[in-house]
Length: 466
Image 1 (cartoon, rainbow, N blue to C red):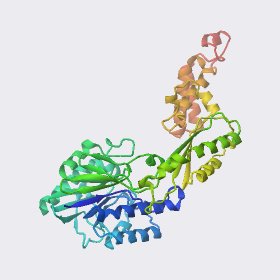
Image 2: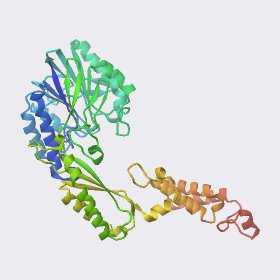
Image 3: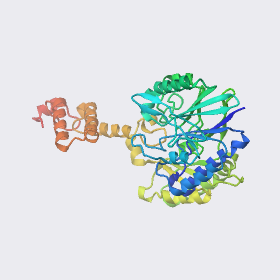
Image 4: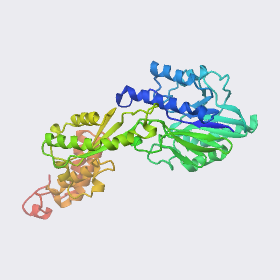
């Protein structure tokens, strides 16, 4: 029986929030996943992209990954992700190529030219310098041919057919293998909308039909579409990612039927703590209430940290990353609202590695200005003010409470267009003034009066056009 471990998006070297421990976390989660090779009886590791977090790798990151990979006794087959190499400005030697040349990984990537994709052969024992395009693995089920496709960004969707043609050309020339696998770094939009995915299921179908297993990376959240599998990153690298339960880990792939079982990775816990600032008129009162609220959260935080996937290798507690979400209507002056002091309280009380504040409070003045705007319109899903709705209310208020009130809707629209003219089109003062004069002549050919006056009344009192 032949089995593979499929993992992706390791991001070695990433110091999230500037905290060095987070770079260590990425290494430890990778090390733990690789340590499962023996327990899972894996014959090879598939890693489609973002082994590194940056193309400029720190010496300590490179040294640590060399140490980790040196202990792996099965082939580690890698294709490049967007963090591993620059798509538009290729270097003569990348750090993935360096690891390939040292025999620590087998690097696979396609050659794209004239809307065609070609794959050069390589093997795990003597990889050609820089890596090849595919590798044949001899298994109990016969030859498994593994192809690698590097990150192609927005080009990927229209290059799927070229990849399929390239795979079929190799199989026709070298003989059909028992099974075909492709490693690639992109997201499937239908499966994870709004997460930066670039390829639709419809455009991916030819590749799904041509191979037995599509091993993806790039999107940090686990998802599956037929024979397409994306394991999610091993670590969570944002507050949003930290909320995704069972979405981070790796697959154990059985080559007998190309089924894949997901395993949750070892990672650092994320916890969200929410506090409503409404009703406090002094910061001392707010801070005292905040201290009580955070103490009340200690038990819940400890329960989260106690889950097996969040514990260190020796079973000890790993300090959490805390998202401190501040909500409600703030009555204090902005200067008096000391978010750093609240962050320090939360960090000490909850024994957190790091506290990331999210200020979703509403200033009283803004709340009054928004007035009767529907809340779903006025505020985004994350609780922040919808500035477009706020701008519209400001423009409408200016229009209704000015001498242009007889055409309030048109005036508000004009202000909105003027804002776009200046901010998006870069119009100068003269151009903006000219636009306003032109619009005023169109809307008020007979002149304008004071707020509430009609044009006819203004004309009767001798008003003249400006």
